[in-house]
Amino acid sequence: MDVVLAFAAALVSLRLAADLVRRWLDRRTPELLAWGASLAAFAAASAALAWGAAAGWDDRAFRAYYLFGGLLTAPLLGAGSLFRARVSRSGVALVLMLYVGLALGVAIAMPIDPPVTGPDLPEPGDHLDFFPPRVLALVGNVTGTVAAIVVAWMGIRRRPLGNTLIIAGVVAAALGSTVASFASWGGSAFTIVAALLLYAGFVSPR
Image (tube, rainbow, N blue to C red; front, side):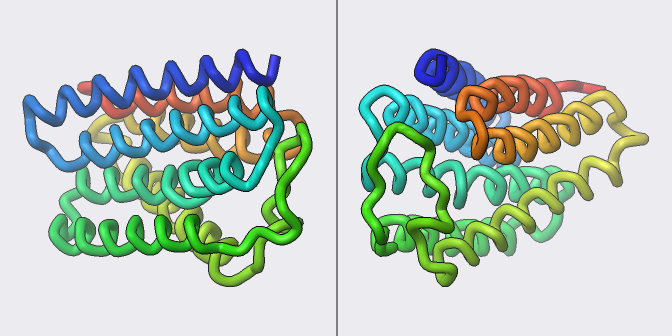
């Protein structure tokens, strides 16, 4: 069940990400690219989850899962919302590029002690130092989530359906992160729901 749902979450998220990138190629609006990258990060994190569930967790699978699921998904989502709100697009793009570079460096270089082994989803607090990897994940997730929710809420009168779906998708993603620590299949199920809700919210005209 864990492997099947995680693999399904990866496929669904990747398919939706590809459609957003196609739309970006047609329209060249930066929010579509950022949102597509966010759903692609969903897909990569789900693929790492499937890897760990199928072959057992190791440091490689954990680094991939932490990078895409813990460090990148929410900040990319929040950046897309800020782009949609036209909040200093050049400034947001610069901060986002710096953050992504920092996240990549941290995920590659962070010491993992003790090494990750076993069939169960690792708990970051058991293997990572608080600074910088866990602090960076906390700052990135809080900032990205708050940006996505605040922008959606402020524009809900202008686009009630789409922004409500975005808020619901953010909530589903947050619930998925919580549930995953107890049952990885539950986290994958919430990831599928979150990806579908977010995608519907991104492309909704209303």
